[in-house]
Length: 124
Image (cartoon, rainbow, N blue to C red; front, side, top):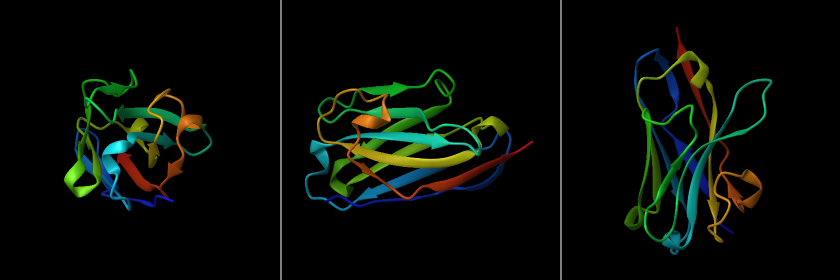
């Protein structure tokens, strides 16, 4: 069982930046692909970004490409999401997730473990 704890959310003005962190309670963090998803009020959960477990390849939703950057520090069992040029439509609860299989990284159903989420609110 892997526990994921997100932090770094908050209230920011449009155009601002936030960095989310997600710490995993596992000594084999490098064996997991990691993803970030978000869910806005009244909407379905959507893929934001992912990073694979082997080569550090990254994947982004079109809506955040060029503004968000996912990275990982295996020594700290932590994945990050740097969010720049934030827009009001980025407002959502952001979740990190871990996938041991490393396939289908854009689809939430492939992830085995999920964090509790952190709220990001972008004011206009």
